[in-house]
Length: 383
Image 1 (tube, rainbow, N blue to C red):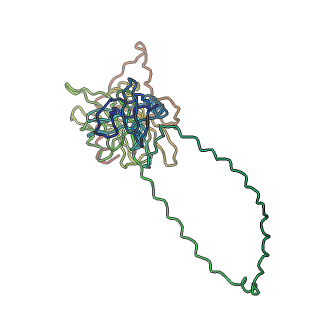
Image 2 (tube, one colour):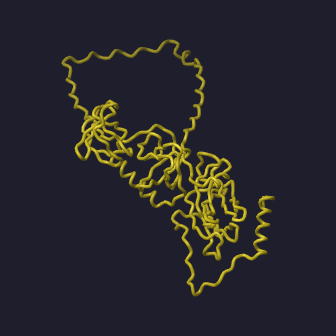
Image 3 (cartoon, helix red, strand yellow):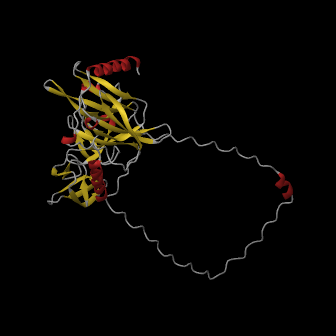
């Protein structure tokens, strides 16, 4: 018994790939293996149709269970943004180029980015569809028959030469020690992204082939760095359109053990009709997951402010979860805790009751002027 790996698989009447198609099966369909010929197998579908296919297109029951566990894990992880492709891209069951492909992302199709990983580029060893045969049992050996005639007696040992003392004094030149072995070449690695498909399944896709689906008017500020995650933090009315405040994380170098080395918070300036940077941090070591709590563009209180938390590593290697909030046109650090993977995700703060809610007013004219001048100072002098 085996399961179909690709999204669709054609079964053919003969091994020849130009042979007639007898049936078409889909990913996850169970088939029975009837016969094997080299790397090809004759299978029977649930409705009784038979056909030949490549054995590498099938998955074992253990692989199918692992794929179900991967989908369940991806379902619980938060989305770090939607991604698409320019050209068709295969989604694999494992972070390996030769692993079975369960789906093909087409141009314009959106998938959720939930996790990333580095995987060495080594030869792929798929599990065997057939059980291994038991090891051969050794045949019992017959006892050797005793010879009827006994063997002749051993001859006497030879005597040492007369000059054996002189021979023992000679020195033998030692061979030079062998040179030290050359250091092993580093194994190349690939960047892989765990994506969640629209049908609920999950798989691994090459990261450099994915494009995060963030608007171009924001993506143009990436400075050539790869955007690893993005989030819409607040809605901003802009005439008959709705703009957003954005948070993103970027990575300047590929194949790094961390997920981002910079993050940036963008706000939409309704007067100038453009995006501006409210906060940026560089030269970091950040890790997923990034947790966000969207809010209002102009919050009237702390409970309405957009918040986000990031896992950042300091110089000593200790990881901290730092929580930021967008307050009064600026991003401030409001909490720092040692990272605990079992800690709950960032949850919205409870809203106060209407009868106890105190009236809040927005920033005054002089306060807005002060924040505008502070923003100009940061852009001009970098502080």
